[in-house]
Length: 252
Ligand SMILES: [Zn+2]
Image 1 (spheres, helix red, strand yellow):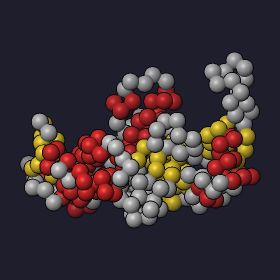
Image 2: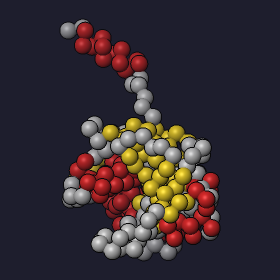
Image 3: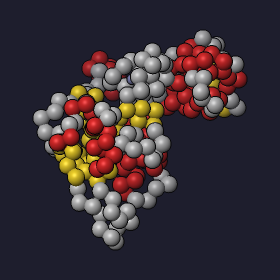
Image 4: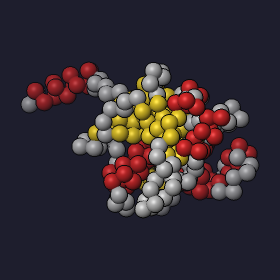
């Protein structure tokens, strides 16, 4: 499984061999090649279109309309900016935050466990994890806050979380700290799931009889002292670009 390539990677591979301007049909002509990597997938064409959208959103492809595309031959572009329109159809504040950041993660996060440069969003009802790596099958749970993360994370349902620890299926935790005033991600860090032991999973009180999910029991996860791998931190702009712009605005 370790050498399995992501859809985005495979479609990118096909696109690079095509002329600079190409059509959807030029890509789907390589359907058999793609299908060979994912023999069980019955939705190859949908996956191709989805991958082309990801490449477009990463700035390596331009949609020209009428099923025509232009390859831009640039490296994938990282952006700390969150797109508020990605959650436009939601009203609950917590859902808006979750959807915006999951959309951001889909375009900007990569696998820290292998060389895959994108993660796939899992269906909303998947227990314990939000994202998976198509290449190495590693799983990730996204946590976000408008403040700084301290030593406790709010976990998923208690029972399934304990079961995941016992089965050694705990996802990696990706901690996203963002600022809603600027719609921007500030810090992102990853905590290895295998370091979350059973004693770090603390049950919360069951929800009362009046709650929408009465009897549901969540948990807190204590991450005190665990190492975190930094993925995103604020960075300055390239100083030669800044100087060039400075000269430009001072020459007139
Ligand atoms: Zn991976």
